[in-house]
Each structure stands twice: as C-alpha cells, then as structure tokens.
Image (cartoon, rainbow, N blue to C red; front, side):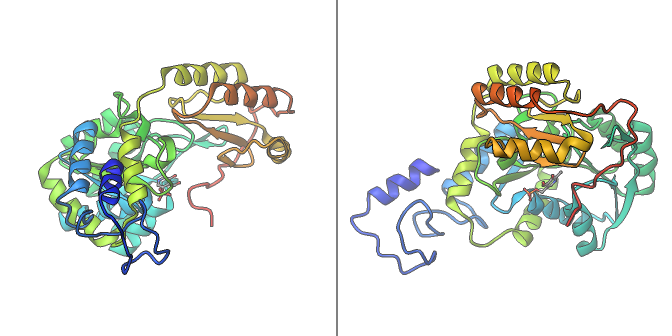
Length: 345
Ligand SMILES: Cc1ncc(COP(=O)(O)O)c(C=O)c1O
C-alpha cells in the first residue's frame, strides 16, 4: 500500500491540495482520492491489502481499522446483534469497550466471575464458561489478556458449538500470535487483532476478522457503522506491513529466559513480562523512569513490560540489569486485590 501511494505521488508533476487534510502537504497522509481507495467500499489498494491479511490470518474477511480494537469490539457486537444476539457472556474484567458496546447496543451482559491469583484476574475455567454460555446468546473471551494468559479457547469453541452459540475473541493483545496455534483466529467466529499493541503498527491500527462469509456480511455492516470515514493511510499501511512482519525467534527466546531469571509471572505470552514489586511498585517505576525506561503499566502490584518483535536484545538486558538492582516484595502468600486496569477512568 505504501509503495503504491508513493508511486502515485511520484508520478504526479504537482499536487495542489484542495482537499482534506488541512495540513495541505501532499505526502503519505493523503485522503480518499481518485487514485487511492475508499475504506468504506474498497476496490483498489485497500481491498488488496485486506484480502492479503484475511489469507494470512485465516479469515473469510478481514477489515483494517484505524480506530483501535475498540472499533473492532463494537463492530463484532453489532454483527452479533443483527444475528439475534440479545445477551453476551464475558469475563468481568474484560476491557471497558465490551461493556460500553453492550450498553450502546442494548445487549445484556452476563458476567463471568474471575478469581484472582496473586492479584491477577485469572481466565475463567471451561466449567465457568459453560455455565455462562447456557445463560447467554454468545460468548466473548479475551486472549491473551493484559497479563499474558491465554483463554481456554479450544474448550470454549467446543462449548459454543455444543450449544450453537457464536464465539468471539478480543485479541487486542494477541496479533503477534497469528503464526501459532495460540491465535484467536483458530477458534473464534469473529476476532479483533490489536495490531498496534504487539506488532510494529502505528497507534490505533487494528484488524477485525470473520471466519465465515456469513459472519463477514454482518461484520461488514458493523465496521461500516462504527469506523471513521476519514481513514489514515499511514495507519492502514502500517497495519498491512505489521501483520506481514516476520517472527523474531531470537527475541522470543530471550524474553522467556529473561522472565525466568527475573522470576516474572509464568504466563503464556512472550511479549508480556510482569514483575511483582508489591509495595515497592511506585518506587521502582520512578527509578526506572529516571533511567529512561518506561513500562506498559503499574497496577500497584506488578510492573508490566511489553515486548514486540522489534524489541532489541540489548534493551532487554538493560531492563534486567536495572530490575535486578531494585527492591522487590514477595508475592507468595500476599493478600492482593485485583486492580481493574481495563476499566479505570
Ligand atoms: C483487552 C483489551 N481490549 C481492547 C482494548 C482496546 O484497544 P484499543 O486501545 O486499540 O482500542 C484494550 C486496550 O488496552 C485492551 O486491553
């Protein structure tokens, strides 16, 4: 996409902008012009990119989003609603976009309680999921979650098939898993990939996908309802490139070794290193920032360090060196409350 836009711009002698955006610079941040494409009804370079992405992600249709996974969640719930879903089961600590979309669309929430282990809300068990699925018309799980734990997707798939209920996944933190059997697209009817979080896309770049043509038609209406009518080409191009970005086995391995040496939580996802600091969390965050190191979040128990295939080995080593010099509390036996990071204001 980027190459195409560059070629189109280069082929023009002059480009006098009497169109949006207001910065009036002809560059990659163009709008929907005759030679570019339209995100709402793509026929050219966007259609080609979405077709490629669907093939890579194992979907019948994939839609590029420039409004984050939030737009994907709203679009999937809209699609469910148009197919008769009136209630949705989802874990109580799901991202706020899920409850917001339920509220806006008039879908009843069936909350699945999550037990906390050492201050982290655990994924619900298959038994808990089945109990909730029986009371709702559809199921949403988040996988992986912010702490790097996978949902029991295979079991959930079977449960939903048994009860003939649709299954969707919030994969805001799992776009980098599309090479693996841990990928949401192997299990769900519809899912969203937060490409900008764990792959090298610009902030807000995401993809929402449908497994079958039936769901694709409903999802298309959803994205047409909720996404912007002024899509950013730099974001769209970055999403296309990020999904095609190769794996980095060296950093994946180094991340797992770093986790082990640091005594980070044992989770399922190499991109998320959560280190327990307890009462020292604030001090640790301040000390790290003074050294120019910024974690993804501090939930007052854990500092979370978020990696991607672009993380450099020397940066990981630097992080480990700094963390080893900081005081930490012991999570074993500590009475820890869950900090609602998904829903805080
Ligand atoms: C689990 C989860 N789902 C959805 C979202 C929304 O993603 P975005 O910020 O790309 O809209 C987030 C954001 O942090 C998230 O953590």
